[in-house]
Length: 259
Image 1 (cartoon, rainbow, N blue to C red):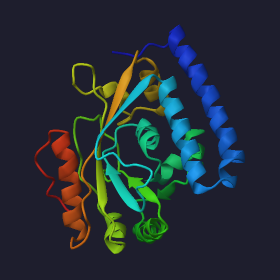
Image 2: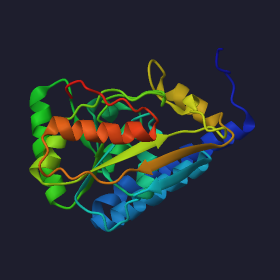
Image 3: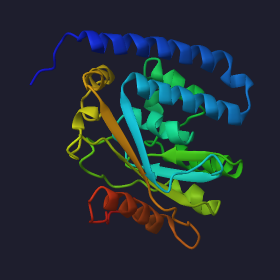
């Protein structure tokens, strides 16, 4: 069914608020974030993310082993569904994301993501992956909490793709626990709200229109117990992290392919 070409008044109202909030974010990112402490920066990013989700009328439900601000030097790994995933996670615990290099070219949002201390990786270049492992290890040792999406792409939320485990080497090298997170966008009846997904050939504008068309939506963040990296090699750690998320998504068959 083709998407409606016109926005309803409520959608236009939300879009206007979103534009104003984004302009506010640009101003803060350009003038304030570079001058404040890491703790203050995290508070600003967390507050801005919560406000953005509020404008879009998205409720965040966090459960499981929810990390507090006292959690330091951690690596979160999550399934990937939407550009909203970043803001949902940041609304609970501000983290430093590891994102694909092409996100940097997104209009406006790409710049904002970069200003939030994001690390960008070009997965097509093996030398860039090696460089990123070293960079991530240094960031962890500096006390940062990082997060990346090991599927390497988005889905509609009904499947879990194979994990790419190269960056987990940084957790092994620094003896850092992996913290798996299931991200889910459920409907009121419990089924998956695939309209919230940003995947396939969907453009960012089409995704935004679909989000704006939702009267009210929910994103669930299910934080699994941390997995110690001590004594594990990358492949095994990757499989355990994936299975932890798959179980929460009710996908019980672990991926057997090499990450």
